[in-house]
Image: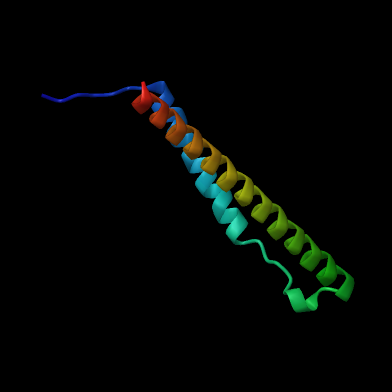
Length: 85
């Protein structure tokens, strides 16, 4: 028994996937200047931007951790309440 699937969505997904692969290859060919070849002002801008991004990422991780901790505490408290009933 042979099952043949003729799904328009699948064909569209295949096309989109192929387009993404092509754009990725184009991106790989893009040449960046070396960090050392940039002016000291540009280097400083990049370093400040990286530092700012690191701080923001750390703040986001701390927020996620704190939220997860609060949710875990709530679940533990509701678990103990059920035991008391």
